[in-house]
Length: 392
Image (cartoon, rainbow, N blue to C red; front, side):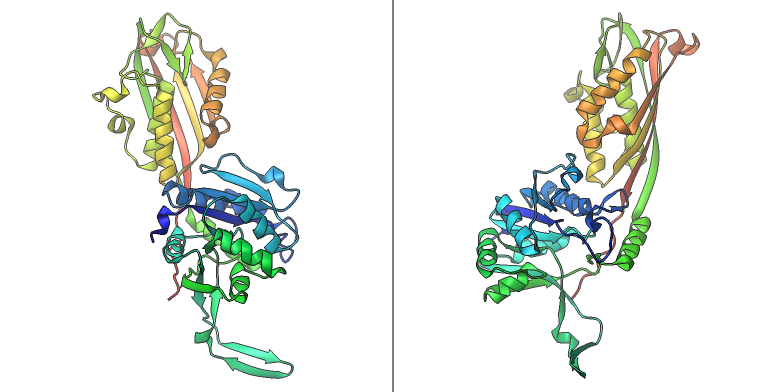
């Protein structure tokens, strides 16, 4: 059976208090550019984008509702956990709706989705699957004052996510009662079948200050920042609408172009494509292609943002300079910014950009009101994947 054709939920466990590290629960500490729990949620986004999962369920501790975000690009449900881990997992399973579920700890931020694919391929409704890593240290068992060696080749470390049929796991947890450090332990105690796939060393759990130091060091090494420059110019003519930043502006003159000739959207798009190394706006949206005839250029910008997101990039900042002699445009900038905020809520562009309007001072083509020019600079960033350290 191909598990990719089954329905799957990704259950992100973020309900713990992290008492070993002190202070606020560790899953809400900022790691890189986002709270630690959101790293797991972004992995779920990638799984959803590949058609591998149907939904994300996030389990928070009571009182942390303000930590929710609305920028996740996959169906998501937030629910509140219980006093023990098992209580929280049960609540997450009850909030989920799929046939299968993967349960992942929010304290493991560096999840390679290749593990998820391996789990899905090996799972069955009556069989759980977990990632395991071999022990690399020599092991000892202590009983009272005696010390006994344990063959390390017989002992493996367990990671998350762990995959199960949702209803069978829910039934097992309800019947077992009590709690455990992971769901596989309770699953095995009920004499159910458990399979395994190789784990990943980088998928470690952050439990203490040293782990946190290692995680921050990894994020610093993963961080890549780039800057791109964009430029656009369109002729001002009679008989055309003037569209800037997705808004139609009252004006006797409009911009001439194959699309709606929105120079702001075009310059921003070109800056983003340049920064990401994904070509230019003319290559992706050529004037020879009738699909883009009179197109709303906010659609073009949205497609560009989707390209960047697919390559792992996020926008840090965009700075725009529009050069126009007529009409006077200073008063409409706040409206343009508001429109960007409404149009691009997922990307939060309104809080990541600045737009300035400059007069042409009657110099050159823009100064003679023959055209409008727009310049844009965009800074973007992404976190480069850490090479997988798979167990054998």
